[in-house]
Image (cartoon, rainbow, N blue to C red; front, top):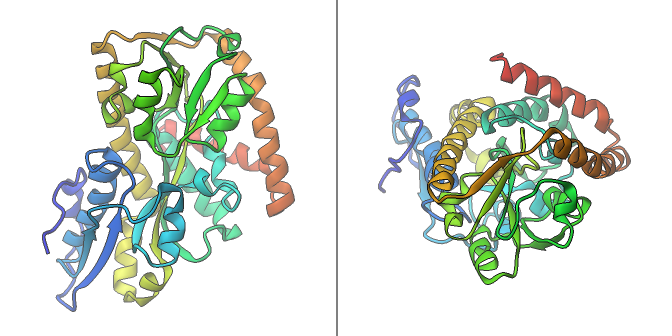
Length: 343
């Protein structure tokens, strides 16, 4: 079977000693994102490539030619053994996976790497005990780059500019923030549909990280961009393995996969997304998009309006998980600061 060789992380693979030759284990994996998207090409295939090389070919991954289920069913597909390894968006199963929203509120990390590493630390230290991912083995968590707002008809200078707008969103926390800002959400979990919604006039704007200008060709339809420090929203992701397949692995193979998971995976994934955001920003400027940085007044308005979303999360965390949401958010803010300072 041909090894995946498009890893952005290959320079680090040589640090790991190859294991002695033994029976080959092949794990299937798939992605709901396009093959060219960094989430597939760099993150998922890069992870697989590292593991293959570090194991000396003992562990191999086979990328399915097509994702076997609709994107929102990805978590269940891994749990049920339809695919062995995949990445899922936490908001697609928001009723079951409440805690990962901690990394999705406005004003998070200024980069995907900062946000992802802080999220990983807080998750494995405080959130993993809630066993929200029962039925699968969690390898790592991360977020995309700071989520921004892109529009076709007018710039966003104040919260009042959102009123009457139809904003495409993937649902979950970002949908709640769209509503809190006074706009009407158009929810689609297939990000590829954003172009058609914007070009047809069905949507007036979209919530996305900056990589979308390359990933989903938004440079053809977006006229205005308003950038918020730390983002207006975020999405949290998990890299999962079928629990049965995980349990069938040797201790040696489990330790190898774990080595490339956790904070290591979060940091490298964040780095990859930050690079994709940089390319997206360049495409946005090349396309002549009118870019504005949110003023302090707009940021203040946004924070006031979005506080209701944060309060609702804290209440849900207390009721359904018995945890102190405010204290968890303080821990996350502390880690954001530490990671931002290079700790």
